[in-house]
Amino acid sequence: MGMLLLISPPGYGKTTLMEYVANRLGLTFMKINGPAIGHRITSRPGRSPQRQPARS
Image (tube, rainbow, N blue to C red; front, side, top):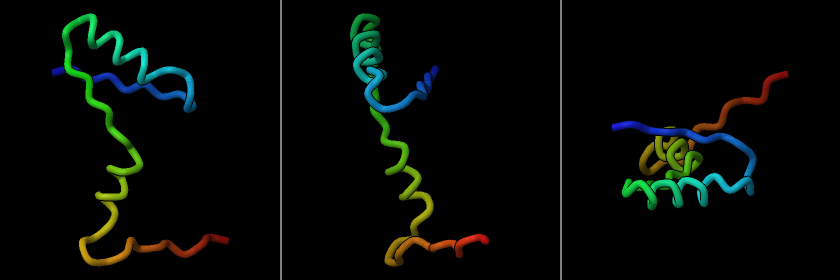
């Protein structure tokens, strides 16, 4: 199973391009929201996420 990660600012058409390519090749396209995944990893169930003290 191969994966491809595209990184660029919002609005450059990454999702649209990959949906088109996946459709043409008969592949499954999965949209993953990176910040949402990171939030699930760093937060603990029943507790608010830990805040780090500001650095001087």
